Each structure stands twice: as C-alpha cells, then as structure tokens.
Length: 324
Image 1 (cartoon, rainbow, N blue to C red):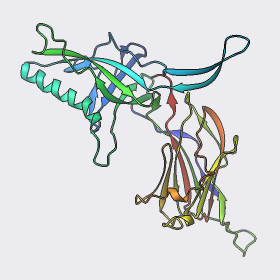
Image 2 (cartoon, one colour):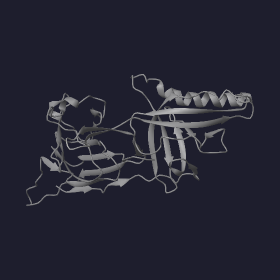
Image 3 (tube, one colour):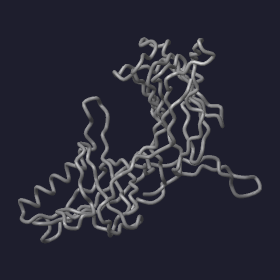
C-alpha cells in the first residue's frame, strides 16, 4: 500500500517589527499575550506602556538543582539534575496624556497580568505568554503567571500621568518554546492492485518508519493526531524500544472510522476523540511508555492496524530551548 509522506517542516511566520535591545537576549520585539488572547506590545517606545530595560532578568538559561553523592575518594558525583520553575523580573512604565488616560492604562495592564491567576470554568489555569521575536523571523514563547509587583513607585509626581511597576512573573515550565510547531505527516494513499486481478490490501500499515529531528535544547513530549480508519495504533521509539499502543477496540468508541480523529498527548497523558471522548483506557497500561523526543535525530515508527485509504498520523511538537 503506497504512502503519502511529508518531511519535517515548520510553519513560517511573518517578519517581526523593528527590534530593540533587551538585556540578556539582545535585539528583539517582545509582546505579552494575556489569557484572552489580547496582545500587549512591550518594546514599542511610542506606546503608552513599555518595558524598562534596566532591571529585566530571568530570560537566560533555566535554573537547575543538582543532586550529588559524596565520593569516598573525595569530591562528589552528580546523581540527578532537576530543572526548576523560572522567575522573570519585568519592569514596566505606564503613562497617559492625563490622569484619566493613565489610570485606564494602569488598570487595564494590571488586569491583563493578574487574570492569569483566575481559573477557567473547567477549573484549569490560563497563563499569559511572553513572545520574543528575533530579527531573523524566529519566535520563542514562554508561559507566565503573575506573582507580584504591580505597585506604583509611591514617589512624588508618580501616579498622576505616569508610574512604573516591577513585575515578578512565574513560569512553571522554565524552557522557551518555538512558536511554530514541527509537524511530521504520514498518510495512506489509494491502494494499487498488483498480481492483477487479485488486489492486495494490508490490514496493518507502517506509516512512519522515519527519523524525527528535534532542533531544540531539551526533550519534548509530542502530540499525536490519528485519522481513521484504524483499529489500533502503536508508537515505538526505536533507539530505546519504548512504545505504547492505543487499542480502539478496548474503548467504548470502537474502531476509528473513516475521517474520525483521536489526539494523544504525552504530557500530560491524555487521549481524546474528535468529539471529546476520553479514550485513555485504550492505552496498553501498565507497559505503555509515553516517550519523549530528545534533542537531535530519533528513529521512530508508528503503525496502524486496520489502515485504509485516508488513514493518517501527524506527530506535532514545539521545540524547547534554554534561552529566548
């Protein structure tokens, strides 16, 4: 059965506006995106608010805690490395043409940051996002939560038409992520008969015996989107032998029909149909290992049972980096 394949690709982005110099990262355009999706420019010096370069910190490499064991011959040996949550210090100047305009801007920006601490109706948290766009067109992002600091300077003349605040932003994931995903697509093409007049159609199809390249600095946990028809899907990381299988026949949904989809998230572990059904029971627990992709090339295979024309698998991930 022939396959339609596509190489690892990234979605292009529009060139960013002219950059300014920012401590720790150099020239860039930085935007804050609040939980509603509203974009707040942070480096536009002609705007009514902008970042004060002096005092910015926390944009460099991730913080780590090292665990070691004493060595009997002296010194120690490294046993474990644990990345820590990141803290970003972000000074902001806010102004207005008059006191009314300043107050409106001050309140709006405060709300944009503090609403990251308000739960959604489903009980989940919605962080904001700091977006760093480079002159070469690359864009990296990091999710942030407001921690503290939205307070005026409390000095003479402040709080009338201008004031500044020094924000502390907390990042549960210390790594920066590429704004553009890497996507690997494999699809079953229309089968061709051979040994005519006897058509040969396989009930199992290896769609993705391939090498996937992670251009980032650290491991990523990919998301898989499977399009039916399919009855079972097996995903294997060939260099370690780690694998997991989603058996659709073990779920209430049954076989994945033509055009139906299922999305498998490896972090956190989650399996959902295109209509929102929870299919996590279809994974082959307890032997299932929802593996990650380390930096560099990794040989992987994904196989569909019950594959036919239109069956497809998409592997999606955002590369992660130490710095912006």
